[in-house]
Image (cartoon, rainbow, N blue to C red; front, side):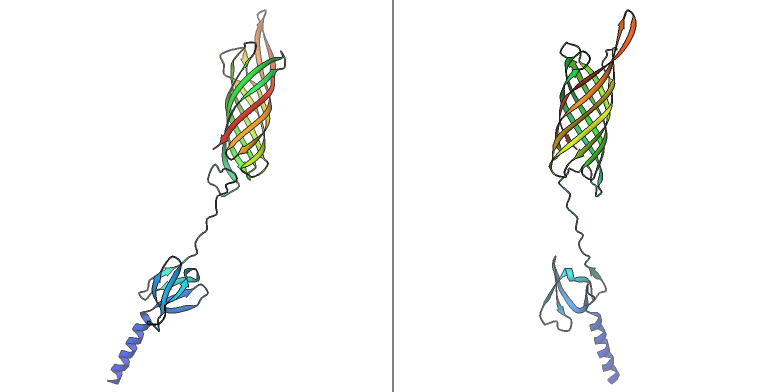
Length: 252
């Protein structure tokens, strides 16, 4: 009879030891408990040795995990904090680095003077630059576009396709900030006039960026070759246009 009583006491003690939840904190301490409730911020429990006693509340941020009486566990890993995107400069692709792809589309008009014959010209154009932005301030790209020009003496309009390299420096990393742009390349003639050939294409401009919008003013120099027949002899001559250009555009 005595052995039976001892066996029953041992069995009850063993079951009691198993039928408990264990709260394990991040500092390494543990509490035997009966977990009552887990919400988004806190854990509520009663101490295992006093189920009828007070209810305790602890923040989840202090708890590493809970091992339940049935052997399952709940772990409480720290929440990952995602940094807010930098809104000072329009990001053209999702990137955590200081180097990213960028694209700028611009259009505008120009007033020029042909230096050889001293005649006034008017022009228009659109360009698309695609490249890499470095450290929010430097932008290096390759561009292509279309431009047309004509002269007050009635010659034209003539069409060209410029292909160029561009470097742009933005002074500050702000929504509204000035910049400097330098471009150089070659423009090919696309008009049906056989007398006109392409030539060098370059410009330098200053402007202001308003978020994704840009506006600029600058000077340019363009050359082209003009072929003509004099006394059935073909002659080539190089002409140059110097002028002022006004552009507006946006990045995407």
